[in-house]
Image (tube, rainbow, N blue to C red; front, side):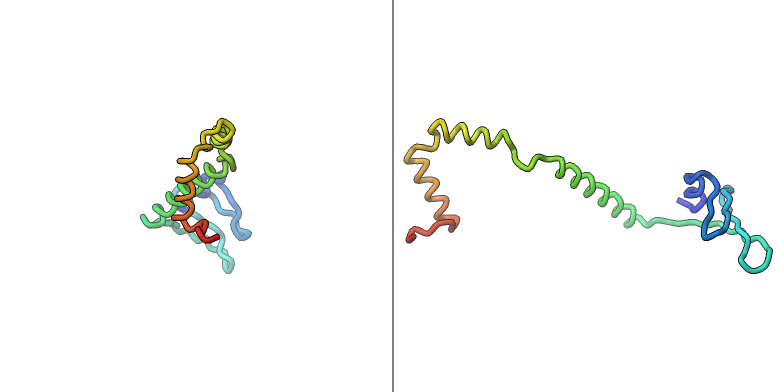
Length: 114
């Protein structure tokens, strides 16, 4: 991408630091501050492959953040399913209670001495 590309995208003519810059293929021109001569030069900006890769990664991160923000805070369908199981007595069995106690003890959430 060149400065010229940026100028063309901006509509062809732009004022930069108080100087009028015309859009000409490959050349920018402006009156020099001292003297009345015209300065012409070609500007070019090269973006490294690493910077291009970083741009892709930043774009992917932004898309992931947006998708994450659109997710509901609570998965209503999971809550509804568990509520129905609790109300239906699915967990009111001694084998389920024992397994739950075992998992909680192994995880260190509860102590058998309390």
